[in-house]
Image (cartoon, rainbow, N blue to C red; front, top):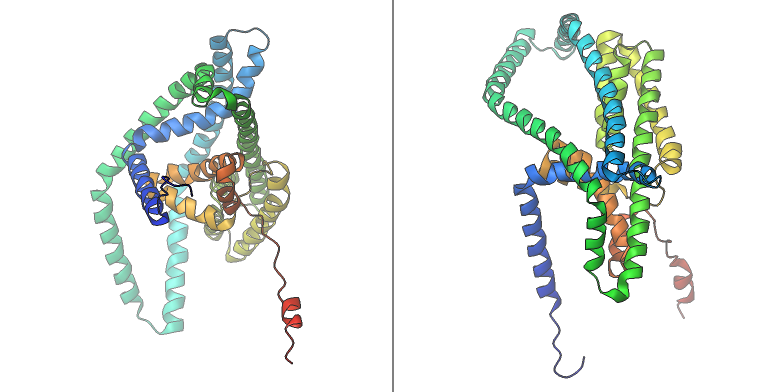
Length: 366
């Protein structure tokens, strides 16, 4: 170090980084009503941008190109939403029958447990009734909060299309803004990095959409082949939960097995579990490596951590946004030289194991 230069101690740097991260996370939590729809809109805009750009190449007006892409996307989303609503209506029509069958199975299991473990059935029923009453009391207190959540969700659904349109329209302005943040000497490097990152992000997000469609189809076909009720709705729900790594898979298979128990018989729980395991094997070993961008691989440790952190920060939307956001962060880390070690830490590339046995062979006792 030259004379007159000062170097900030490592503990001071660490403290500043921790304080900065804490302040940043606090801001994200406080402004979640603004940030969450904006993040959703940015991801959707990244996915739609290639289609808009394709139309603009044919000398089409930008606003008209965005409107056409919006119309096509809206038709697809409306058809998808109509399918889900019809499936939910079908479940509601038979909800009474399902409830009666579930209560019958539940009562039979209580009787079997009371005989096997020599427990008075009345005590079990009393405990269940008490727990049910407490749940009802808590649920009635949470009705107001639920209405608030629904209201916020409607606001988000209204804001997202507006944000998407604005981001697509002002995309050249946002791109030039990024370039102006850096000096003229770094323009070519920044342009190359932005282009590469945008392409990989688009491939990754579009790959997630294709993975969702394929997994939803496989789930639906497997449940339909086993004769499970509401195969389409369950297949779609399972594919949505599949976006959440590890946790979503556990919830999906548990839901499938419960429905199989209620609508079929206990042995069908094993069939459903086996079918879901096969689908997950195909997804993890063929669909994700081939369809989802192979350059974006996140290890299991940080996948679970970021999903839990996303739920704590933004709730259920945070769980769905956590993996795409972490993938984008990893891509940025991989393209910025000082941040490459952090990108390596997030990835799943295991370093070679150092063999220490030859070292000990050389240390022979005299």
